[in-house]
Picture (cartoon, rainbow, N blue to C red):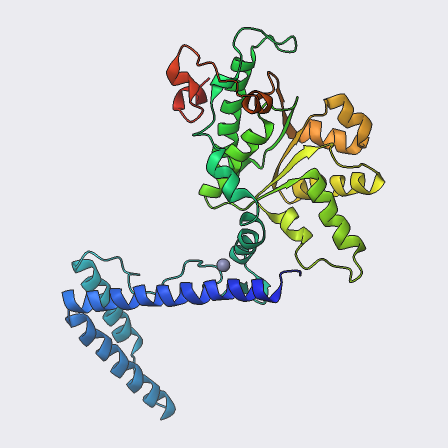
Length: 346
Ligand SMILES: [Zn+2]
């Protein structure tokens, strides 16, 4: 797999650091216990000498009954810890990842925590982290959305439509680990599709999920580099990350130059992620009938059957910002924060 050696080494150094840090915590705890309850060391010494005697006797062929003595001593250790208000496992080894014990590998396979670190390294630095600083539920404003003209499609004004959609996005985040849900945002340019994807990305990154954001053009050219490069692989790209990350965001679907190759890759990604129970968000300017016409019937049916389909409409906010127009504050000020609880109960 295509992590470069330098990237792999960088991740292994993170694990070295974690292990050193956790060992330090363990030593600190041990010293703390000894200072609060010095008798703990005596019990440990007894356990060592009893264990040694037991081993000697086994070698000499006799079999004393040591098991009960050792069990009793271990109970004494737990009692000492309890007497100073510490849990019985207080002095056990400390691991940030209990699965791989901070080695990154479980029986020669990369642990899930390694994959997450790799995604952080390869994608976050370049893409998402900076964007989500500015585009998140706290910075989202309803003031850009008009509250006077209802849309023919559902009778809602852009403002009320957005309140409904933001509430669905919050539910998507809240139920993320249980539901493996997917979202398709569609609607005109500048109506907030990418912004909302970033809001969700930020909320999930903050709860330690792995998120990859790619435009459709980036997604397909990554596959092309891998499939058609002279060496058969692109060292900076691993399709497994796209298929395995907790959330994949494909932005601006329809802006790529489409052909049978992009069609088959899109189906592969959508379908494979559904099989792996991983969530995907797609945003596009295309209408649903465009999607059916441009992509295959099987892609269309996967999307319509397994994605929450959300139509955004309203003014082109990007254009409004570019031309110096100001948002119009709505009357109920506390309704206008996407992060407030109020809207989540609509
Ligand atoms: Zn791990």
